[in-house]
Length: 116
Image 1: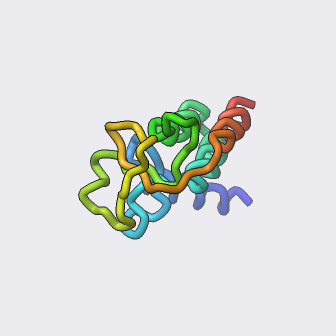
Image 2 (image 1 turned 120 degrees about the vertical axis):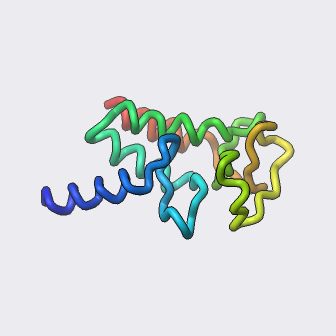
């Protein structure tokens, strides 16, 4: 079991850009909501501060109406524009995000899990 968890942590560290963990560095270079939730829980097992950072980075894209987008296009990633970053009118001005989102409870649940 230790070998499996060490391998998983190695993948997370390799795909970590300091702000968030990319699900796959070349294929999915953006921050994806569901992936970040699971990454935060995994990282919190070995580094609580880094697990919290994952959720905070996701919440940087939270819309004015409280929704959290499925994808957050952080400024350094926008140049890649794999899925089109058509931005919601509710998205923060500094970030692009697609026009679909989930209720904001999802990151909150992760943050609770990371704290405990």
